[in-house]
Length: 89
Image (spheres, helix red, strand yellow):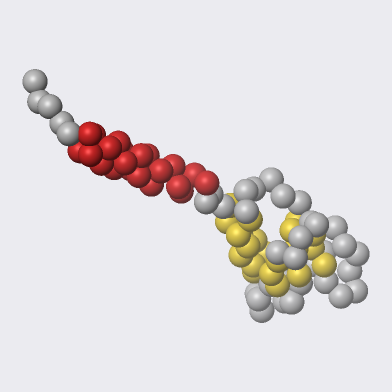
């Protein structure tokens, strides 16, 4: 039987705890990446449209091709799309 000193056992427990926390950390930082293209009723891309997570200041705008990418904190949020001259949806 191997006998360990108390400090060795404490170090082993600490290492195990750190390993578990490192494995769980990505889960707590999970984000949803949303990509899309905003178009008008004719299918033409809308450059400069804004996309905002409802109730927050988190958002982005579309590029020249109407495309956008947005990181959402947890997923399941409601996105609000706006463009000058169009009704918000």
